[in-house]
Structure formats: structure tokens, C-alpha cells
Length: 322
Image 1: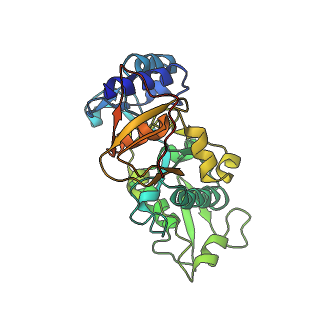
Image 2: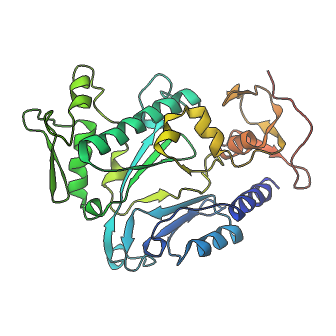
Image 3: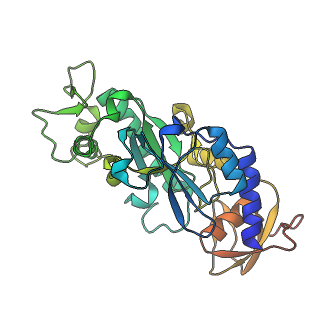
């Protein structure tokens, strides 16, 4: 019953969703089926075709390739005809060694604030040190993605992407001759250069804060699948949403508020283990009636069962615990 309820919610969401997959006809699409199986090597000719698929067979998670291919639906990676790949970055609170993120199980705003600040630092470094414009996305869970889609980065191979990562994370820095290569262009990062600034590096030499903490494997993998902006996150039920720079300047709670896909109604949940609080909502009971988005989140995290009667959620009962 809970699975059918979740499927109905996801289907209804995708009826009105706008899924952002640029140059979709050249991208490999992958999705997480309701049974938890990851399906890859699909292709779609248009956003409308992809949307119809998501309404007909609502995926738990939806992904597309950072790479562009001649034949994106080929199962043999060598036969796909690689045409280049976006530069993609993943900042996940689960990988941040901060007091708010360390040992985190359930999402909290404090850890997401740390990830937000890291994303801002990354965007600043891309723009002011490398002359690249990044497009930020809230992942719908613990962090942020940044997409760089300019032509000059698409031809970078794994080794060149590794060198960029080394620079951003501050690995093997030589301050006497500091430069970064972006395709055929060499960006010299001297203080007197109009393009580029050593400010981040010079400020952080003493405490190591010059390093930007990213998931390095995501950026160096030229065949990587990344969560599609506009799709639902299979670990939370929140939407992955594109952000502007000004959006990212707002606090984490405001960003999550925009990502809530299931605002209406309340659902009775039976907890599998004690949960004191989630995103400001106190629970702490064996059973509790919570907002639908909290119920879906706890269910997808494996922390609770949904008590659904006749496929309907619970309405009119407010008992958030305490």
C-alpha cells in the first residue's frame, strides 16, 4: 500500500514537473526503478518524451550523463561515441568533516549550511580564478551540484580534470608558479593578473581553508551520471532544483522549502527506531502524524513505515510529538 501511495505521489509530481536535461538527445539517461534496480543506457529525443516516461513509470531517481554521445543508448561505453562532457561538481554534506555534518544520519539545516558555503566558495573560484561560469543545483538531499557546460571544458580528458581538481582542493600547490589549465588555455593565478586571484589561497594557507571539498570522483569521471534537475531525490522525496547565485545566497532552510514537493496533507508513520527531530519537526514517538514530506523522507530513509488506509493519507490530525 505504501509503495502504491508513493508511486501515485511521484506520478502526480512529474505531471507538472520541468526536468532540465540540456541537449537531451545526446545524453544517456538512467533511472532508479521502483524495485530499486538501476537502469542505464536509455535515451530520449525530447524533454516531452522523458516527461511522459516519468508519468507513465515514475522513477525513484532520475539521472543523465555529464557526457554527450553520438549513440547514447549503446550499452558498450566504447561504442557510444563520446563527444565531450560537462564539468560537474558534487558537494555532499556527508563528506564534510564539520561539527554539524560529522556522523550525520538525517538531514539537518546546519550541515546543509556548511555545504552551501562550500558551493559558494566553489562558484567563486570557478568564476574568479578559472574564468568559468557554474550553474548550481540543490541535489534534494545533503548537498549541491555545480554544472559547467562551456565548450572549452567539454573536451577535457580525465587527466586534465584531475589537474583542475588538484588546484581546487589545494593539492601539491606551488605558490611560486601557480597556474591552471582549462583546455588549451592556461590561467595564471598571480595576484597582479586581472583574471584570477590568490585571495582564497592566501587567506587559507594557515588553516587549510583554501581547499574546496568536492567529491573528486564525480568531477574526473567523463562518463558520470548526475541527478537530473527537476527530478525527485530517491533518498528524500525532495526535488533537485536549479538555483541562481542569489538563490544560493539564501539560507539552507529557504532552499529546502523551495524543494518540498509534497506540502499538502499529513501521514501517520510508525517509527522503526526513535527519531527525535527532522528539519525542525519534533517526532520522538513510536507513532506520529507528520507532514507528508516528512513522512516520505522518513520512509525513504528506512526509518518509518507509512500507515496508509485505502491509499489515502491522514488529514486533520496534528500530533508531531514532543
